[in-house]
Image (cartoon, rainbow, N blue to C red; front, top):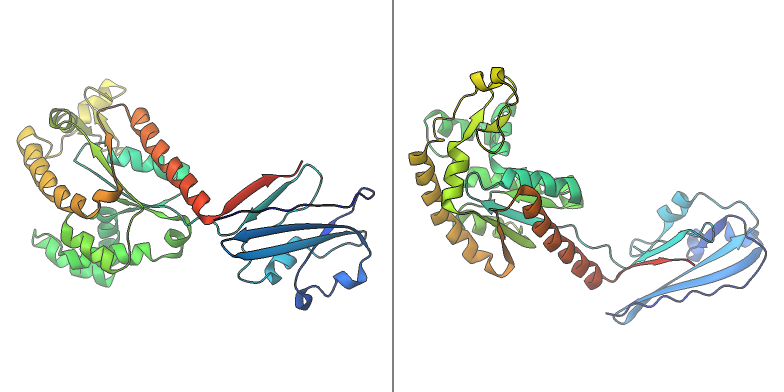
Length: 319
């Protein structure tokens, strides 16, 4: 792919507001405005070329929003021409938003990393468990079906959860901003179903944490029933003795039960990894949360840079 920017100008007295000329059908105002300066910018991608020209005039031009609304659909590139110090931005195709999956064992720090990733990159955070609870609370069709299994103490079938995830990923915000799928898929059947619906990630992040560390993290976790805040007796102790006295432990946050959960997790994640092995990045989750995020951040930054380069995205500052 080749990116070419040609910019030339005829020196004239300091110009007034500029007007971006569009095809004849959309630039009827231009013929009535005396030209003082003409500049030309072109973009070439593969064997095609898009050329844009703007004329600086003494007359007051229509609002920039009006011009952009009349631009052809194929023209993604934008031109901003204000003062000599303003920026000119041209983009042949704006890079597609990121689509990320993240997986990790219980207490691997997945929730913390999801929060940090969404804060910086603006991705839509999608967690299957949260979706399930929300659908049940809303009384939707999927929620009513799921509740029947939950009330019997049974696992909600894959096809119900997959439909919930599918519908969430199809919403406009996920399409526009990209998505971060948290802890899902958990089995090869779920991964296959998502692929059949057309949802394939750009990157699969696996938080790799030693089992001894996971057990220590889980067994030391405590819940404040008043505020809902999660503490850890060693790593994040309660602020006061009053809070410490009311903390509770989840029934399954015992060493015996967490080891059982870890075995189930390892069995399931291996099957999922086989489908995403070419795009999987393992991150050492034994590090501090900031160090873990720094590694994830580097990978995502690199992915975005590659995507910008591949799409012909260009930013240039006007001197």
